[in-house]
Length: 100
Image (cartoon, rainbow, N blue to C red; front, side, top):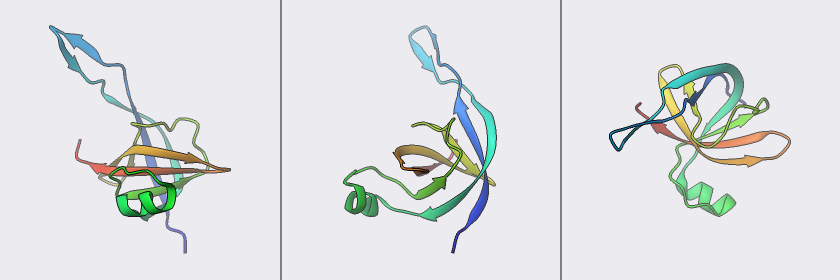
């Protein structure tokens, strides 16, 4: 069974450096997409793909032109930062839930 969700895609603008301190760019909305979202874990990612990265969700995405490492995918109020991408005919985006 697929869990289709409308997901907001957000990318960060350029960082700014002020007095030696880097200020990260703000998140800007790019578009909304439909995708399947499933729970996932670091252990499953290691077992399945051999990557040892902390993750909490896996997104299956067809329209992935604006998605890269660091992109934030938002479902409702939950934000998930993309940590790893695996591209097939579709994209598997492995994410970690973030608060900001």
